[in-house]
Image 1 (cartoon, rainbow, N blue to C red):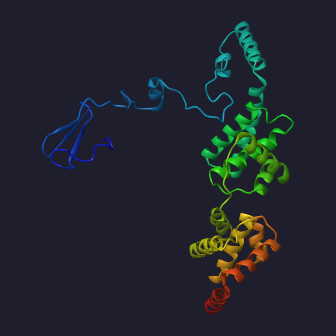
Image 2: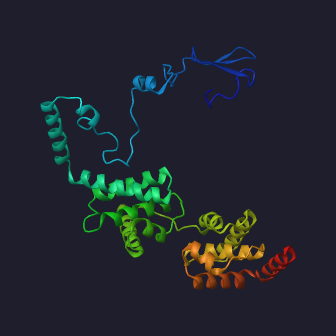
Length: 310
């Protein structure tokens, strides 16, 4: 039933009936016809299997930037169809297919290779489809404006993926992208800043809280520890301890402190390996949190709890 019609204007009743055949909304209490001549946007046929439905549908797949032609292009013959033809006709179609590839523009050829690499890296990092679509859109705009010239295709792909991750608040570090793409971390960061600046893409700073769930899952910490670490981060943000510091380092330190409070001790080396930072970074952020937020007493209580459990 349409969301706009919630109650009867005559009697105020909410017992409404939507007659799909007539396109009417009727109040069952007083019989008032509230809406009539409504447009039915559903399909006008029935389908009993996927093949039957595919024949009756009049629209194709939705447009997507993850394909070089956005899914709107056509191809000369499919391989299954070509081999049904005779020798001369088959050779003719092979020549047509060859020329179709040759007359494609430089941008199309670049996108064919780059989007395949983008899908590979996205699959490796297990990114959602929304991030993959956004990164493909950013890369397509970069190619159309000539920003890829003078840079490796892989670095621009990695930069577009990192920008899409930041826009959709999907926590992925430059180290992870470097490992997946085989490009140096500095090169990815340089390309990411260049592309976002040239395309006018505004990206907010990363929130350390976005990394807590991933790090806690890798360290096998409890839900209480995760909640406590987010509370510590909120206090740190109010005390302006997060400004000018890497989000992964401050998130890992907050998780390390929360684990000590709940008696789930993890070494600084374990936390540093999961977060992709050094032990020195964990140690420095840990000392700052203890000193500024006065967390010494709570950590001592956590250590006592651990001894009692033993």
